[in-house]
Every structure is written in C-alpha cells, then in structure tokens.
Length: 529
Image 1: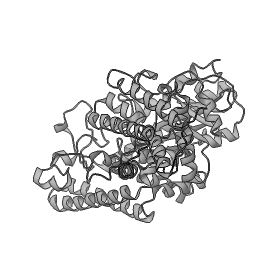
Image 2: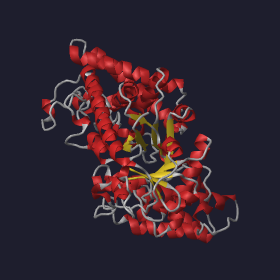
Image 3: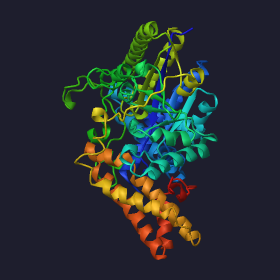
Image 4: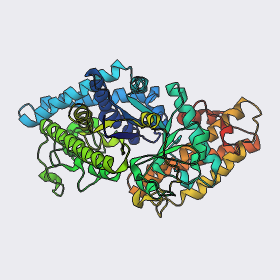
C-alpha cells in the first residue's frame, strides 16, 4: 500500500484566435506551436505509457476555446500547411548544413520529430480531441473544464449571471464534446471568490482548483493544509496547489527548465538565418518571427545569446530523466514525512500550464514520461492519481470556506486589474448589463434569435482574461486591445440593432463566421438567477 498520492494537473488553454477574414495573423500560430510542441508530444507520452502497460493517471483541463480551435476545420487546414512548411524548411536545413556536423545532426533530429508529428496528426485525421478522449475513456486521463472563455470570475462577481454563463456554457460545451458532464473545473487563473462554489454545485461540478493560499487561509484553518482537499459548504471540493513541487518546476532560479543542458527558447532560426534564405518562412510582410527550429542550449542563464553552445537532445533527455528522478525522490520524502504526521494518506497536487511542457520547456514531455515510468517501477511510497479518482476513494473531507485568491502575482487580483488594463472593466461591466437586459427579450424571428446568441458570444469573448493578462505582460498588447474593443463594439452594435428592430443580416452573417465559438449557445443563459 502506498503512503500517499501525487496528482499532476495540466492546464491546457489558449485564447480563441481564429481569423477567417485574413490570410495570415501571427497570433494564430500560438495554436500551431502548441500542437507541434505540447499537445501532440503529450499524446506521444500517453500512447507510449499505455503501450508499455503503465496505468498512468493525470488530470488535464482542456478549455472550451482550445477545444473549439482544435476542432475547427479552417484552423486544422492552416495547421496542416504550417507543419508542411516546417517540414520543407528542415529538409532544406539538412541540405544547407551538409558540412556542418552538429547542426546537420540537429536538423536530422527535427526532421524525425516533425515526421512523427505528421504521422500522428494524419493518424487522428487532425482531430486531437478524439485522440485525447480515448485516454479519458480508459480512465488514465481525467479531462476537466474551465470558464467558457477563461473569464476572470472575481472581477465579474457583481454580475452573477455573467459568472453563471461562463460556467454553464463551459459545462454544456464539455458535454457536447466528450459525451458526459465534467466532474471538475480549473477556475480561470485559479481565481476564487466566496460564493462561486454554489454556482459550481448548481452546474453539477464536483471539484475545483485554487492556489495553495486559498486553502491555507480558509475558515476554519484546514487541519491538513493543502495536502488534502476541503469541501465547501456547497458540497464542492477544493484542491490546493502544493508550493514545494510547483517551485521545483516553475521557479526561474531553482526550477528544472533553466538547466544549461536544455534547449534555449529565445534563440530561434527565424532570427538567426540569413534573411533571403529564411524569407519564405517568416511573416508575409517580411518581418522575422520564431520558426520553432532552435539549435542552441541555455548554456548559461546570465550569458549573452551569442555565447550559447549547440544543443544536444541526447544529453538533454538524460537531464530530463535525472530531473524526473529528483522530482520523484522529493515527492517520496514529502509524502513519507507527511504520512507520519497526518494519520491519513497525503495528497500532493502539482498543477502547471500544459504549454510549459514542450513549448516553453522543450524537454517537458520527456520529463513527464520519465516521471510516470520511474514512479511506476522505482518506488512504492506514492501512487500517481487524478483528482476524480482521489475524490471517489476519499469521500470524507473537512468542510471549510476557502479564501479569495488567484495563482497570479502576489496571489490576489492585481495582475488582471492594474494601470495597464483597468480601462477595460467599465466597458465589460456595461456589456454584461446589456447582455442581461437582452436575455429577457423574446426574439421576433430567427434573425433576432441569431443576433441574441451572437451577442452572448461576443460578451464571452470580450471577457477572456487573456487580454488583460497580455496588456499587463506588455507583449502583443495591440492585439489584445484590438480583440477587447472589437468584441465590445460588435456586442454594442447588436444591442442597438435589436433595440431598434433592425438587425443587419449581412453583417451578422460575417460576424457569425468570424466568432463562431459555441454554435449551440442559448442567450437565455444570462437571465437573472
């Protein structure tokens, strides 16, 4: 019998970025990069573990915007073209570096990797959701949902209908996708406020995730800290993030991804190659961008980019195995110590952004693979579990009220509400008021029905926490501003047109094609609770 449990939780999310009105939008490549570097590599890990008889358990959120994009025929077609260009470029790189031994070795490595990505993509006919669902069906993977568009709940709580819509639309979308209701939810940005758990219970959800201090400062103070979930008074369980295991991966100072042997994210062929040679593979306007082919390792965290040594995937893979062994050893010590004082099996919850594994930390999927294999064969102190199985096997927990919190900077709300982005909230609040008003309207005809549903989509898309987050980080800010404004402007036009009884059918059709998320949405979800 194991002394305790470790739950690895991955949050797979990207904002809804889809531009059929344009031949090229750089931000669409966020999805293509994540497919190549994170989602398909994770599938390879799961397939390998299953093939080798390892009964792995992992929890993974897949947010509605991500699911919608992964299943969108236009984006699937564009990804196919994106991958074809990568394959074409790497073939040129092999030829171009015929007399450059180490770079040719790396080019050949990438050539094999891209071919494997292509094989997996075609084997699943471009439907990665169906590919992940097979592991949900086998109970190896517990897929949970999130807010419909990753809206930041505490900054919407003055309009409970808006929070309810984020939850209800997400749950309905999950059931349409996976054929069953979701058991759990990753609160967007792990942002919790007191009272949201009642809506989660009404939506049929059994559990949610919060940052560690949301549990540690609960009332009364939980007896077992973050090493056991708590039940809220609404009956929904809250799991808290473990600080120790999180720091080992996340920390910029002591985290694994900063090891000198690992691939350097910021040194990319798109910026390094001779301009005329790389021109067909960068932006149509001739501006350089990241391609995803990187030949250098971190070498020295403080070193200049010009001082980076060449990368070697062989040694990087060895380092990933070493780090997986270290992570496992630390969890053994942690669980062993806790089991001795808790009088019950402790649970260590280790949640991360999924895109860390593969996209930001190239070796991350190897780390996960080694961690599951080593945990299966090399120790018996803890079992890897997913959250649904843990709750089923441990149905009795302490009842507490979690503390308002998030997993952002300083653990509260200031990353999403500060001088860079405060301007958006009066507009979002007014838009929520207008949508709540529209929800009581009975459509005169099918055109008005479509307009009301589109207004609901536009509000949800405007509420995405990604836009406020991007404004705060200072990268791609014009795009985030443009997206916030465009969704608000569309909602306001729909509101005015509906009030005047003159819906512009041609314009509505274009907007429906661009913002086509949640095809089965019902605007009445915003009706007063």
